[in-house]
Length: 337
Ligand code: AHM
Ligand code: MG
Image (cartoon, rainbow, N blue to C red; front, side, top):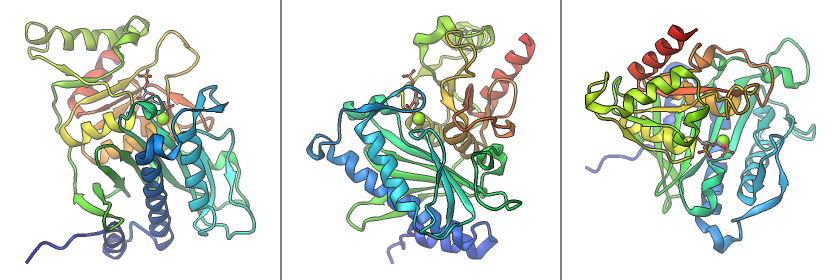
């Protein structure tokens, strides 16, 4: 008998029954996010035929020129999620402040954050991009919802994941019970479970970093990369390979599939900013996924998931992936402190 396919819906229902990690409202919310990702995937696939490529006439709150698909993906996620009754509010890389669910809809107990289309520089060149999301519980000690309700450490996340739009469309998810992967079956129109309990090997010979920024890094970061580049003859005694896709989603996906370490460190160009990537809707969800797969994630000094956010669009230095490499990076930073 052919093995039965397990859909995302069935997986979530079974998780809900098994250990109560997914309350009913959260399950429905995750289904809606997945549905929105399917729509985004369709828009991405159409590309020039759908008139979705190129830049829009606008900038986001971080002063970045928005691509048409950044805006489309943001709208798809909001429209799909606002009416379901599971959410109190949403926050996005593409919106200055939080989006409170309009009062014509019921208010739910969750908060959803997302980077609607990560890897924007890859949209127009047909390279993998993705959607990253993180779910928190709204604090129940006051009525209504405000921006401060979102400022919770990554350890408080109740679900996190991403959907990568690449050769396949793949959804990767955690609710705190390991990492599961679902591949979009386009004929059926549903996500099908294709891997469970994903594990990142503790050791690796592969790193991902934008090397063109090397002259701006601080000393521990330079030391780590210099030693990787020195290969077999250097202190590491092995050759390393480098990959840089410039979509965090795609670089992290590779690490979940075969190990490696991904870094977007602080650099001297904008010392007041902690790094390029955003804590709440990029670093936190990815760090939780990586930890759930047996890896580690740090800003060099502290575990990312322990950082207390102070603002919605806060940036952070990111080093994540194979545990022993992340530990080594932490040690180099500690020695220089
Ligand atoms: P985005 O959210 O505007 O797409 O920016 C984040 C992206 C990450 O996906 C990626 O790791 C990084 O920026 C690439 O930066 P660079 O252009 O320096 O290679
Ligand atoms: Mg991004």
